[in-house]
Length: 106
Image (tube, rainbow, N blue to C red; front, side):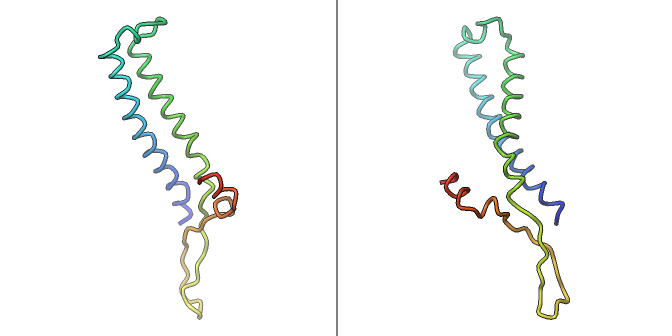
């Protein structure tokens, strides 16, 4: 279960990158088709602009979700009173359960 702790934020990073890459690609195609004069200004080429937007989206996705690596921790859970079975579960850390986190999220 400890292996899942970094995997969950990695999935969230990839989902954020996927959504914003779609948005940025649509914006880039709009500029290239409807406003081609904006694309050629400042000596930028279409290839460099597209790669810069995608790289910026990837960096943004990682920075936006870096705090998610500190949200969960793996803990042992006892299944019964006899203590025969125990398993691991994900639990929220103090970072998430604090009042400051809820004020920032609302």
